[in-house]
Amino acid sequence: MSTPEEVVKLIAEREVAFVDFRFTDTLGREHHMSVPGHTVDEEKLEAGQAFDGSSIAGWKGIEASDMVLIPDSSTAHMDPFREEATLILTCDVVEPSDLKGYDRDPRSLAKRAEAYLKSSGLGDTAYFGPEPEFFVFDSITWNDDPSGCFVKISSEEDSLSSGIDIEGRYLGLRPSVKGGYVPVPPVDSFQDMRSEMCLLLEQQGVPVEVHHHEVAGPGQLEIGTRFSTLVQRADWNQIMKYTIHNVAHVYGKTATFMPKPVVGDNGSGMHVHQSIWKDGQNLFAGNGYAGLSEFALYYIGGIIKHARALNAITNPGTNSYKRLVPHYEAPVKLAYSARNRSASIRIPYVGSPKARRVEARFPDPLANPYLAFSALMMAGLDGVQNKIHPGDPADKNLYDLPPEEDAKIPTVCASLEEAVIALDNDREFLTRGGVFSNDMLDAYIELKMAEITRLRMTTHPVEFDMYYSL
Image (cartoon, rainbow, N blue to C red; front, side):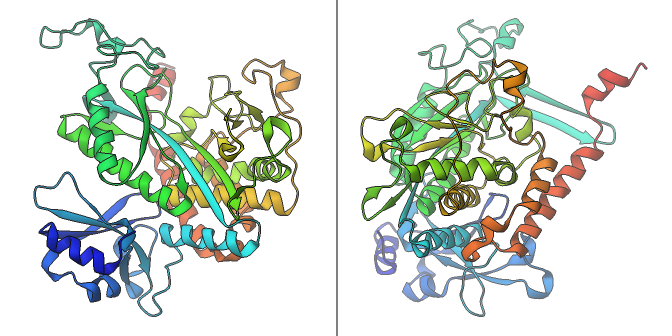
C-alpha cells in the first residue's frame, strides 16, 4: 500500500517524467491526464487534478462541467509501455463542491457498494475473480458509411487462412474451428505474446495464475489472474485490458474484448467468480448442495431473479447477444449446478471450504467491471435479504433438454433492448444504500438506447443476402 508520501518518494527515485491520472467512464473506457512528475507533491495528490466532465459521454452538462480526479496512492505503478518514465495512478472522480464521489463515476460507485455490504451487516468483504477472454487478430478493417458496410478480420492463425498464401510461408499448424483449447506451440502461436503480457501484469502488481489459448481458432486467448476485493479487482481488470491492448499493438497485432467478433466460432465471456466473507469466514461455505451454505443459495437466487436486469450491465453491448444465443453452448439458461458448464451459475469444484464460491457465466468482457461486480453483488445480497431460494440445481446438460423441460427454465435476455427494458423496470435492488442512483441509471439507459438505435438504423450485409433479390 503506497501513501502520498511514498508516491512522491517513488517519483523522485524513478525520475518520473509524467504522472498519469487514470479514470474510467460509464461505458468502461479508460481516460487519462498526464501531469509533469516534478509538479506532483503531496499537496497535488490530495487536491487532485481538475478536468472537464462534460466531455465524457453520459456525464456532466456543459453548465456544470468542472470535476476533480483524486488519485488513489495505493494504485501507483509504472507504465511499462511509455518511453518516458510514467507513473500511473487510478483516480476517483469527485464533485469539486464537496469532494464526494460523483454518482456516475464507476469507481466511486464500486466503493459505495463495498460500503453498503459492510453497513448491511451481511458481510464485510466481497471477493471477485473475473475471467475475461479476448481475441488477438493480425488486423481488422470495417466500414459503415452510406456507401456500404463490411468487416474483415485477418488472422493467420484462423483455419480459414489455410487457402491463403501468406508471404509463401503458411505452415498449416493452426487450430481448427472450435478446436483452439490449450494446444501447445506452434499450433498455439501466441505463447510468447501471452507470456510477455503476464510478466508485465505481474510487474504492475496484478498476480497471474494461468494463461492459455481458448476454444475459438483465430486467436482467442485467456489470462487468469488472482481474485481480490471488489474495487481492487475492477482496477486490475482495467490494467489487464490496457496491458493486453498495448502488448498486442507492440507485436503489430490488435486485441479485442468484443464478445462475438467471429461468426461461427466461440464467443468471449467473462465468467465472474464471487464470494462474501465476514470476520475472516467464507459465508458461502456450508453443508448444502456442492458444499454451499444457505447464504450462498439465497445469493444465487438473487442473481437469477435479477439476471435480466443485470444483463444490461454485465452484457452491455448489442454484440453481447450474438454470443448469448440458445442451443449454441452459451450460458443462457438461468439455472445453477456444480461443475455443469451449461448452467449460467456454476459452483466450481474446490479443495477447501475457504475457496467455496459461485461463478456467474453469462457476463462478458465488454462490461464495465466496477458496475458489473457491484450489480452482481447487489443482486446476490437482495437474494440473501429476501431469502430467494433458487430451486433445485440443474445437473443435466441444459443444451439438450426435451422441449417441455427446456421451456420451464428461464433465460437471459435475447437483446440489449430487452435487457435495458428489464433494468428500467427492475432497478430498486441496485439503488439501496445509494450505490446506484436513479439519475445514473437513467443516464446509462440513455447511452445504451443510443447504441440500440444506431444499430437498428444501420443496414446489415446479411439483409442483402436475405432480401436483395426478392
